[in-house]
Length: 236
Image 1 (cartoon, rainbow, N blue to C red):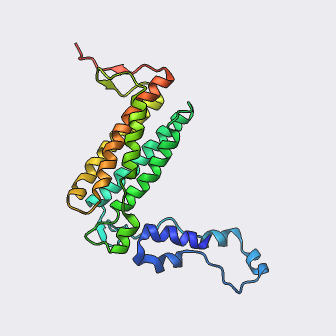
Image 2: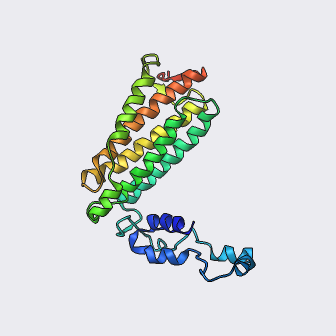
Image 3: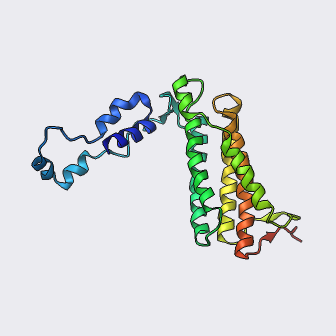
């Protein structure tokens, strides 16, 4: 358990803060007897447990995976925040979709896992990364192919789109449209750092396909639930 905690905190804080992270973890002395260990009170265990806050960002700077300190408004952290928000939006939409047993629920979970990999790649700017960093966070093109396959599969079942539609079609569909719009923002935030060579180009491609996928399954969810989508009409 201790090693797992160390690994998780190390990933978050960066490799240079490994020793600090170890100090945060509660490691019982190997020579402590069973009786001594059992005598520890709940309050003592609580006070020695690793804390979620590190206070390292209090001055407006944060660390990348490479250990580099950058301002929190840096493009890397903007992209990380947008990607995190996207995963949250997909998670919320997935909860609505689970109520209806939609076929794509497992796909949404896989996508959230892939977004963690996207975040790892974004958090490893190439300008300060060593080869060991790059090897750990390289983003492959397979998730892009998966999205294209899923889009084609659901599109075959959908009626042709002949009008602009508004985000609608029930709670599942509407929530997926929200996730789609957040995905577009995440793509826009990633574009500059991809062009500068800091992030793999496949990350931007994945986000581009993902917004198309979310649009497709939003329509698919509305169709399966028998909910009517609202068609755009010019106000008179």
